[in-house]
Image (cartoon, rainbow over all chains, first blue to last red):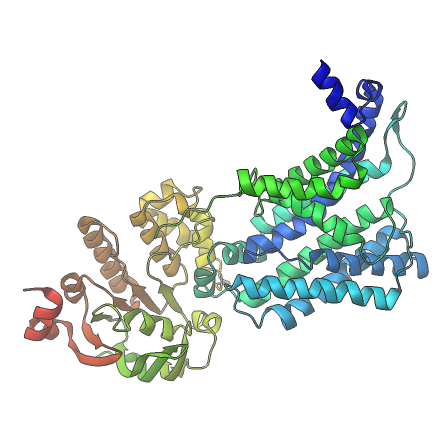
Length: 313
Length: 237
């Protein structure tokens, strides 16, 4: 008991807080909401990782660009937010396809290291370009979903935004699953992911297939950004934070598993909110994400749902 | 008299600075089976890869009179060239059925489904495992799948790289019987690279011996099988 009390003391945990069921529930809902946004960006990371075997560090930056476009379309041009986000998804997909064609495709797809470095460079360039074009002042992007909460228990609110975020991420996963398992372009994408050489030998055009993956991932990332940014403020470094949580989510779920990305995202979102609330660790929120990445890589590098590749030699 | 279907002239291939093929000539007649023999490192695999533009090449490759040099792998596949690469010719993460569907990727006709069922009949073990991932199959089953995957293209030219590699002798014999049957029924022209020279020379019509990136010998398979040098070097008696 003494030990427990001193631990609680160090972390400034009050038993009042811990026994407050409504607070738990409130943080649970917030965690799910955040988690859904991390999951969306994690899905985009997984799309690229599955097909190419590397993490696209520029994924957050493409989403950043997309969210700024959504801001322009909605706040400045007056489109309804949902429509603005859809336009921004299309625009960021086009930009990503262009970037893939110009900066990624010249490199052989099976040499991962140069590609990773290129994506790091793209991260810096895109983030800076966004800052130069739109400035560093913070803005706020409205949410696609109505404010308010249909269900409330005291301070615990299940808001429309939480419901919308969760609904969006599950819809995206469902549509992605259908696309990948039922369509020809999905088959091509999975074939390229599974065996690059055999994919060439059955006549799949590998470059355009990977370009399609980039475009789709950018659209999904932009959607994730449009879910997360209304909770924060829009400024040029915002997606870097989100990227780190999403990386943690993707690593936890297993970098090549879409279901893993969603579950990883929700777990990271919940863990973050509960830790921040009950341990007063708001300064360490980012560190918890990094800690998740480290622990996963040490203990179970394939994550919860990732596949261990077994190949016949 | 059969006509030349694949005609290769002055084919060179290199991996970076390392020249592997030094300008080889050979041809395969329509509907025939040709075999390329040679020691490890002679350039057999590279020859097959060069025909599909999987390595950088120089020289002329004509298929049914049409020049393939300079075309991309994807376009060469659309000309009807199927390639079973050495060892890993499947998509390990895709199901058996998806592997076969991927094999027909460039086809637009309505018979793909029927062809899949046909290969399930030819290779019943694939039919039993149609929903399993290819990576979970045994080596022999994967080789069957790789060949069925290639045949899903309805190729006019089938390139086979060491189809017997890692297979038990009985399975190898059965596999070659299947290949001969497919060659007779569908008239598919085949070019086979094979370590099992005795078996390969039995099923082949034409044979070539590749040594250090040059074509050392060529002729009808039965004549090469009787050649003393070939016998000593590749048949081991």
